[in-house]
Length: 293
Length: 267
Image 1: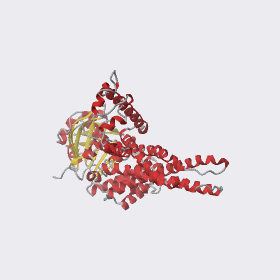
Image 2: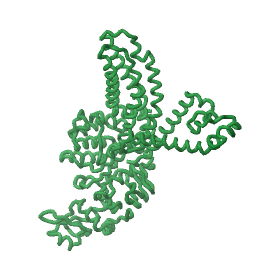
Image 3: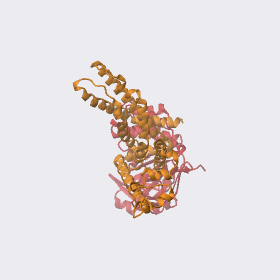
Image 4: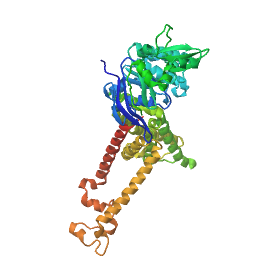
């Protein structure tokens, strides 16, 4: 079995003078997967990503990045990782200079690919980076991250601020990197933007890894069905249901019947995981993956 | 080495504009202030008299801005996860705020001296022209200023890594507090240790003679050279020896602390 890209064991963490956020988190991110990290605000998604890269240090437990302690921030590990944060500040240079400055640290950086990504995302390379809008700045960061041939690409709320065409380009760029076997971790609230990309889901809730499974396991265990009303969905035993006028879509663990299966709705899955985590885990055949924090 | 060169280039690009504009502006301002004296006719002047002070003040401002990325969560993460070693990242910032800064400020003063000299000649001045260049000693003056600047830079460099908010003010406050507590403590300690020699009926008469040295009433203070004269190695007693030793110690201590602090910094 291949070594996981990120391995967390019994990680305990709290920010200074704040309540405990993670009491004992275990997580493994296998190579070549596209992981969707979902969770409500304050669940600890960004913190988990920072811990994984060594930007934050855990109080207890071990965190390994490419088989080495993440907290050491070794150049070999960081050189194989790229992290696009949700909040960022850009230097007073042009986009072209930015690519030169950042790309210089990475032997695997593909300048031509970066320029082609910028073209696809419609960004002016000679524009002063700091004077671009938030969305345009985000595009530059994404273009750089996705042209770096990094083994681990971490994207925190990547589609925030992107326009509709840019979201489409973003999805195709991520799919291209995934096809090359890169590991991509996407933390997001906007699940519709990444629905077709991810093959593994990790759901965080209140500092706990509530549920994690591959999409393959989930698809075999749950089914989305349409109902006339929320009441009808509840009667049928739906773990979660959302109005989708003129009908209601519900998530069931009962996969029998001859109704044509619909694609897994991540919003429904997320709602079900929050409401009935144990049932969902049992249905998907996955073990509890993190203690309450 | 290649990565360090890139880290240095990175810092250079980020700070170049601020540093060059600041140093040129300051040298220009100093030059203009000197020229104010020309309202009755051109006078030869030595621009380099203020070089040490200007270097110190501007150097502190530049140095405390070196870890500006740490003040904002958005840029802090980028700096911490930049794939270079701590030594390379800190070393690049160090090089920019010492060697590069000194080169720039010296260059700016040279340029200002040259411009002043040309204007002076154009206005018909005839005095000793070498005065504009510190009587030919500008390089010595710059070297001495660099020598004085380095330990101060080291302290503020550490302050820049350590303090998230207002690093210049907080470092200055910490220095004042440290010096004050050091003086009070040393005074108290010296008074306690040498109490029999500096107080009471037999002050200055008894034991000091037995130890082979004489304390007077004003030397009950650890900074007093007369105490040091009996306990410190000989080479430290020359002003130069002590100066070099203290500077090297301060540099190693504070640059080392900066390295350690940066390594422990979290995003």
